[in-house]
Length: 417
Image 1 (cartoon, one colour):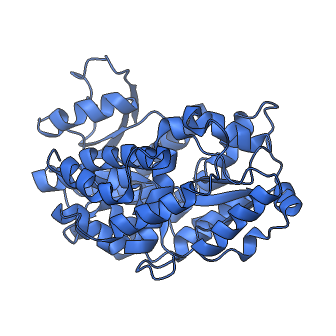
Image 2 (image 1 turned 180 degrees about the vertical axis):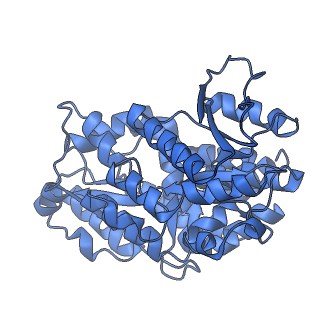
């Protein structure tokens, strides 16, 4: 097993170099791992697979985020393409599938492999009914809350099941002198996340996927969600100067106890501590989380979740050994080991029992019970429409546009998709 590291400017001429002794080389192109321990975790899997598959050599190559995105299209069209590569799913993945640069996993995978992950997560790596890869981990957007501030305002967040109940809690918090919601408006995507959740509840994930596939965004849910979003904005629920606050700043404010709610991914558990002035943030005893509420009259299932879903896919021409390693890398045992180490919320069914963080355990349950895990819309809907949603949410929050302007803005973005 060889481990090859590259920076964004590194030459790719030796990217996929194997060993002369190996009969078969499986090259895996990935993002750099978060620390040496996580890198060693992947190295260990490669060695274990090689030990049980004589004649197979597994090489991990790492490119940073931007380098992977910029180099991969060319690499996939060349004879130096990897057999397996890292994927965020969504619009970019779908374009790769359309271009014919991916290899179907289904025909090469065992029944055990195909039953390892929830269908709601496999959808991110499925195009036109064909499965090309598997998820590594998932992230879920929830509503984090501060128990001390909730008690101060006389609010029981656990009782919030509908959007109207959430708006009532916002009003009650303001009346008690508590900032209802902190948000990093300067980065735009935190605002877009709120709009996306409302859109998911209004339309449902299947309808959003149909819009992404067809390029037809005339579904009235896009307008209705914008109205719901502005309904929230009109309550003035955010901290003063929210449009000058980055995500890190807002996360730190939440960690410092400056707001009741923070609508954010499970990763905020770490960020609210790291970004707080004390470096400790809210304790586990002070933290709580709930799922985003249902919208009355919406077509979406309130059990559907929204978040990230990163994984690995097969490149065109990948053989059986590559498919076998992909399944091995993401099997329940290896996913459980990653969960126990605290690297992520695992995607494999049953692997979440190794999680030690109680909040991650709850998020994992939400994802596993979700009929559909919707990928972040700025990824799922393609580059042009996705980035436009960020601008739309920011403009709605600042009154630059009205909800009625949203359909035209999305249609305009679709022209450049």
